[in-house]
Length: 275
Image (cartoon, rainbow, N blue to C red):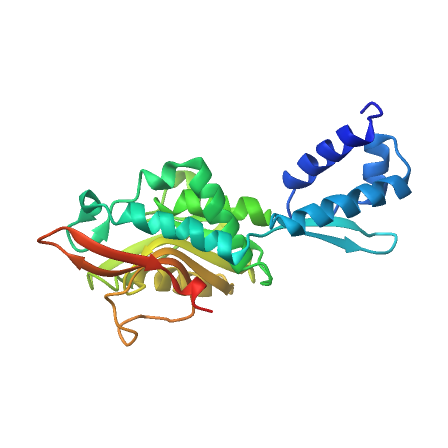
């Protein structure tokens, strides 16, 4: 890359860091890239670090030593996250979104790039202190949420299928009981998709009693994997604590009440904003 003026270098460095979250970049790599002295690069990084933290864009971690460098950690201020999810709750309360069984129609919202980017950053902030190897979800609506979260964490995504596909090779399949319908269902995961002993972040779009997530937790046992966290976009508050199959999870929104006759719902920010 040709030598740049400092103003241009700051812009390019910022974009470079934003597009490579959770990636350690050495000062030497930056110095070579911009044909600049390491002292100049260090000064630039100090400016970027200050702006990131002041504007709530995340943190810039510096690691000293020969193998050191800088690493960008995407984060979002709790106040900003709350504003975003409050607006999401308002949109989800639209009467036409009520589906039989007390479910919500969310497919259109889960196709909005800006919203997915925001939700991914919120989940990445919520689980920033966890040791995670991979993000997992079950097909289909959880897939965009999982990819948005994984993008901020710079992690691969593993997708659990409802049935085994020939193109996946040999797979592990289990039966589980849906927490809401009490029906026995099946999910499977290709043996090559997940390494033994991985630490997994589970992301799901909607949770009632938690049967699907519990199924994924049971499936992970077959791989000797560990659940590092569970993130849920919307949870049903109509399910009591005693009915919930597990209680260690982070939700961004909660459906607290639904009237099927009037199509009226009450949706509030989830338990992430209670702590």
